[in-house]
Image (cartoon, rainbow over all chains, first blue to last red; front, side, top):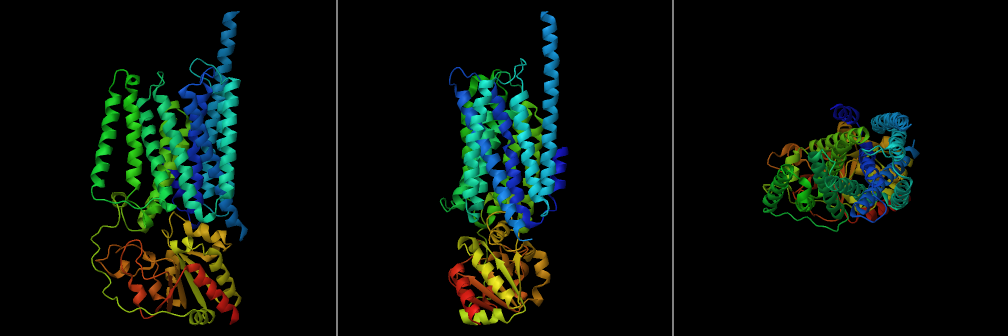
Amino acid sequence: MLSIYLGIEVISNVPSVLHTPLMSGANAISGVIIIGGIILVGHSDLSHLSLRLVIGIFAILFATLNVVGGFAVTDRMLEMFKKKK
Amino acid sequence: MDAILTTYNGVEFTIGAAILEFSYLLAAILFVYGLKLLSRPETARKGNFWAAAGMVLAMVTTILLHTDTAGNYIPGGNAIVIIITVAIGSVIGLLISKRVKMTAMPQLVSIFNATGGIASALVGLLEFSNPGNESLLVTLLGLIVGSVAFSGSMIAYGKLDGKVGNISAGIMKYVNFIILAAIIGLTIYIMFQPNPQDVSLMVYILFAAALAYGVLFVMPIGGADMPVVISLLNSLTGIAAAFAGFIYNNQAMILGGILVGAAGSILTLLMTKAMNRSLINVIIGGFGGGGAATGDEGGIYKEISVSDASILLAYSKKVVVVPGYGLAVAQAQHTVHELEKLLEGKGVSVKYGIHPVAGRMPGHMNVLLAEADVSYDKLVEMDEINKEMETTDVIIVVGANDVVNPSANDHPGSPIYGMPVINAEKAKNVIVMKRGMGKGYAGIENPLFFRDNTRMLFGNAKDSLQKLVNEVNTL
């Protein structure tokens, strides 16, 4: 509940200049699912290649793309905004 | 001796767990703080950094300190597998994010959103078959929402990239409804199994149904509704991550996910408000076909030559540019900036009037113009620029249509009636750059084009702007 309130509180007055970076930054945060992937793979049995392990590794891979790509591209966008000050 | 060891291990376990809990909380706080900073231009970059720092913190402490129910830490071998996977993902992610063109930003945001969604779906799928899992409902919900976000984002990507067309049939409404009902039915069925692990086939069917639903729900939506869809999908990915967070009772995941969900929802509502439409209306699909004949002012439009246009511009005091999706398609952002500099050099004040839903994602025009080095204080929001319309000598509409359609203000029969628009017709002169007399996304006539103070300049936006630049240069 608190985080819903915080989310509303934080975003409600954003200038439209920042809509895209904000969206893409938030998008990167949703990659927090990576923690779930780490937990899954972390406690998997490595001695044989199980479906669980493979799917878990893919989950980490996709989530990393989301996190790293998301934050990096947001930074790139914001850098452009800053340049013209 | 044995007993002491267990106690010792027991204590260590508790401290580790406490540190881990604390680091998750700290990560969640960093997410909030980061988003807060991201909402102001001066601090946005720092905000992005802190949110990323929160993520790194949560990842590192999970690898170091997470224990399973038996109290075992993550073994070194597994940690190495995780680190290698993260490293590969990071390299790919960095490469993509550095290489992609700014004009392809909406596509990229969709792709990254899809990866987050599928990760949530996969985690849900795996956790379901974990016998120790006691939170079956959130597991299934995470799986469903993540899958919808994934396939929906992929379709959104395809549409933005022009690979997927709009398929909108009346029957789809019912198909969507049936699939949705099937998803709900399956979920309830699985929930009431004494041994849910026995019906894993059902879960795969559920997974497939959710994927299909994502495809079908985005399929009929297109064009001007894209900003709404993209922010909606973004919020779904957050919600999926939050559901997964409940499985592990993980504060960072729950708070981070809900935060993204809330932020995405607000942005979605902001976008629907900017179009004067309800979310339901957007999801159910396209502009209602009931768009009665609107162009009763229709008939004669007047063209303007490049040289006349350039003289008009060069001798104005105040020029406002209203960009739309056409600017992005023609990749004309640099050329428009060139024209802006040239005119400014001649003492003309140039500003940009930005409609909130211009383009294909929230804030699309801002990113595009920022890439071309347009200073962001020149980008004026709709309400502000509307106040200045009467004193504007020339307004140039570049590849925009519905966002400057006066029918929205004065024609109650129009499908876009009530949508806030930029009141271009109030400027002294209007130059509309378009490729032809085609209609906008809403498929309705734009009376602006037939006003006495409007002149049309046909052609590709980039070519037309380039010709204007050349012409103004000679003046």
